[in-house]
Image (cartoon, rainbow, N blue to C red; front, side, top):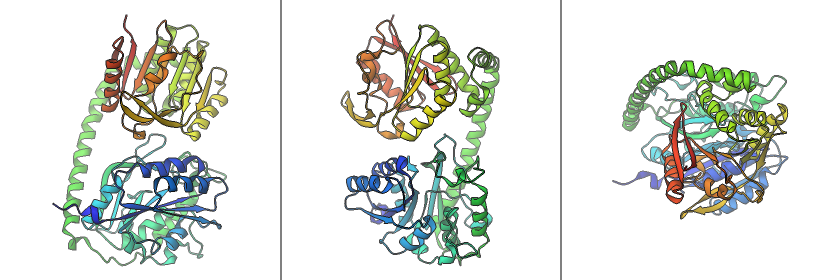
Length: 498
């Protein structure tokens, strides 16, 4: 059977303004795609930071013959750039729109898009996860009803045939006063394209990470920044987009048999997912009810004895389950006088860990490769008076190799012979970084583990890759032992054999 995707070429349209902390991650996620049947059009929207120079270097490195960089001297916004650049700048079968502060997390997604366009679809989109860990709300559209009547089910990572964009008048990218939209641009790009076809497909897979914590984001701008993913100004612009008359539908669903078959398959799959999630929620509820008394005791201990705020626990997400792990860590830290703790990867739980360590007069060092996350975590340490006992070290990911497995890991050259740790928590780098991304963690700190005893915790141990990493560690160091723990999420505790 001929793979039609091999004859399909895409163009990834990236628009960025003052995205210097994020643009490298965005372009590296494109470079990690297994398919190479695409070009990159990068628009720097009159940035005042190093966005353009960072992008230029990475594009030349990863896409030497497959990119175009446009440095706009005038700030225009994504909608206007899309109108001016996309219809005819490069010949492509489909366009995929990705913001410069977001990133792909599915290395096969561009290949999957190409396959869908090879099957005759006109618009394809997926789901997302936010940088705070929230699942997105994207989903399928009914091909027998107007998209404008069904609500926003598409995504910021939006893709469509280039020919449909060529038919969109400039007025659909402008408000009622003729001004180009500078927010809700995703609506302005997507809806006039969706109007023209019913041959669209939702792929129920999480393909990209949507950055919500970028200070430049519209929902964080203005006198009253939004706590959600859209601000009042964005919602007003979206309403203007939806109020425009729909463009004619040139390609109905009934003339495209694969669309009907795939549409039915997607709906059936969604029903299956909903049922599975329902049973999972029931099982989870039963488990939580069984563990409720223990969770309550642990919570009281953390709040009353450790001074951890309830708001911190809720903010961390799945907070009732995290209580068990935090309670366990508190017991572990009690085994050490002034415990020295190293955490790979920082996050919302780092300040709670810092409080536990600080209460015991210890020292916490968090290693983080993302400068924005490092600054955010350090800011929380400073804001809550935790900096005396906790610090974040921003270190880039560098090439490394362990047990014949090449990969990327934190640059650990900042450690000295005097640095010794009693507890190490491995919660980074992200799994998407490379295959077996956390494999180098143990050899990276082996020479810095306390000779009198230590605890290493592998987070996310419910995942296959983390389990494989632990197996390799134990094979390389038979003097270690491992115990799987469950606190709603898998954790593996590694200690020296007695």
